[in-house]
Length: 324
Image (tube, rainbow, N blue to C red; front, side):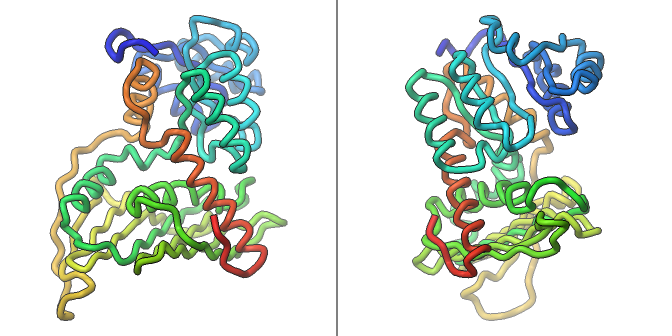
């Protein structure tokens, strides 16, 4: 890789659906957009017209040495194959979450990226959210004390989504929880609910990390009120990041903590610098391509999240605790 200074590399976006168009817009703003591509000619044309970047076939993007990296925002089932093709063509890769649908594919991609000295990362966008980063700083500074429990709620209204809610919504909170815990869970329990056909639209996970630390996630694509919240309960205080609130209210500390005399909670709002997490994620990708540090959502981090998702899927089928 080259120096972290200098102009932005040229990056193509493969997949021009709703989220892919956000990548297109943001890379254009960052001056790094090379081309757009989609299996739908109409979608590719619309993205090209909106961005001013050319619409090109995936094979053309892979063959162009001027394109340093690709963002893969195609359907989940295509991520592993497309990322493999991009790495084979010596392109750096940001694959949207989940990076793959299984640990084996993710391990193979990570090994290949490391062998070739290429960046491979995934779109765990909340790792780049300024409120979450501030929460991490508070916890590292001892503001909550020893973490005892982490609870996440990710609920909104998108009924009939073609993806299982576990794989669609679960990666966001798992990525944050694993970052806060600093280790993988010893066991995972999970349950699905609200099926549409054979696709579960809601569910829950319970994680046991040992040494008194537990976590839980509730996720739903059929809840009419949007709630994106993660709370960290420590013995000294509790930290709450609620992304569904306006910026001045996104992050707060509540005292007392879990091991204090019970009394009414006192809320302390925490100042957070507003920002666009997607822009920060893409800046991290660009910086890594230019020789900078591994992004927070690098390949090995993604493998940890996928391992827990796989264990949760097994647990939902078996009704028993599973080991990631």
